[in-house]
Length: 493
Image 1 (cartoon, rainbow, N blue to C red):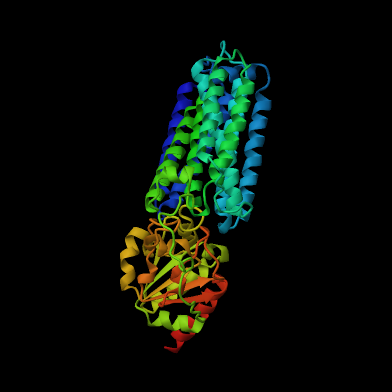
Image 2: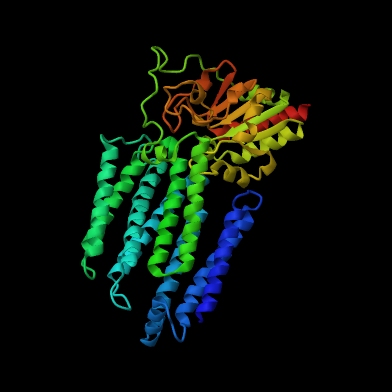
């Protein structure tokens, strides 16, 4: 295969990946974006296999030359067998996971997949360093590529594993704040740089022990960085780890002299970084605060007054019949989904309730907070799965001003994203974060299993407001019973 044909295929795959990202920016075009990504990946894998099967007659790149020599020595069949086996096993594992994983576990799945990318970058880097180069010794640029790639990969690997543990509930969501944690991070970085100098100065492959030492330090650094981040920041953490995995893949591309891997990794890394910045702005947080601190890591700006440690007021419970009457009498309703809706898998009865109310003439819309759930876009995916019309699903900035003109707001399993303390209480760890101002509605209905705190671990005074009613129970069961009652009222009218 000519090098020109291979580069054209890489270019086509890169364009498809760009079109994929563009398509994924909108719910209406997300399906098309996924298709572009699938086709691009098929081209990438196919052209790689073809390049091994039909190496260039006069290879100029080291990788191509190595492939030609392998073919001449009879190792091509073994290489293709290993490639086919890896792709086949990976495809089967991926298909099984995609079929079995619940939407509530999607954030955990994404986090653990990021760890695989990081681990792959570590293994590629170490293998690239230990493999004897085709022409002479490795130059300084290649050594830097290997060192940086392994460092980013190790941080991504261990950080993603910790993120998975927090999302899965295996590790507590509260931040682990070690004394002098910033000093520890600085010492780790200084040790990494020092080992990097010694690694670059070592002849041949004798610097492998410095490379492995740095890998261990980077792994511990990844654990420490994510452990120090609180549960309220986990959606941003997942986005950041997505960015890290992209840069790790790009670094692996440099090590392997693979332009497509460089481009693909850069696309993932930059898009993840941009998404993280957007989410931080939506939470009124600095990206550095999230990476090195997170919610709950700063000291309160003022001490709460005596007697204000918990929200003041009395919880007012409500039954399904009363909620149904409120909704049927309303003109404008806003539904605010949260992680509780995902856990209960209540999106389908919620959609059915929406359809019935809209047919009855009620203006029903959804308000989505940027960090609702455990993953960027988590609520949008759930609602799309239930076929909720895209045009009634609005972002926080688009709908927040409409709450004062809303008759009923229905909060389904959300907590921190509707907490008024974010605007009013300077002692709150989420103070300054923009939230959905549901309490400005005429009435607020909150569906929760209990009065337990949210993922950030703080109480919500909204739940004891005079205009708030609590509908306790499993969200799916409550919405199903509400749907049945609404149908009865609709038939009676």
